[in-house]
Length: 91
Image 1: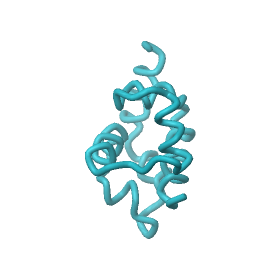
Image 2: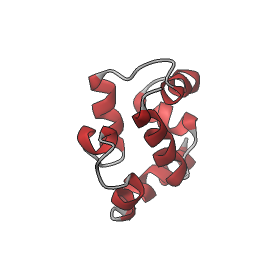
Image 3: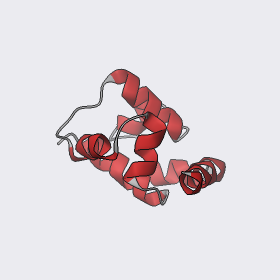
Image 4: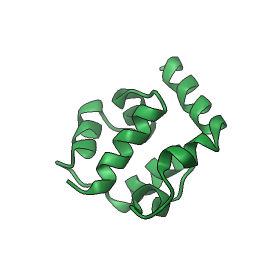
C-alpha cells in the first residue's frame, strides 16, 4: 500500500469524517473509497486533485512523505475542517 494512503486515512480521521462523507464529496461509493484508502485501488491524478482540494491541500502536500505533517497543515485551516464536518452532518 502506498504510504500516502495511510496519510489520507489519518487526515479523514483527524477531521472526524466518515468514509461515506468523503466518498460523497468525491462522487463515489463508500466501498470504492474504502478500497482507495486500503490501497487495493489506486488514486488517479484527477481523484488525487479532487481529494486534496477537499481538504484545502495541494496534491504535493497530500502525497509528499517529507512534507509537514498533514495534521499540522489542517490545524492551520480550521475553516476547512468545519466545512467538511458541516457537510458530513448535512448528508
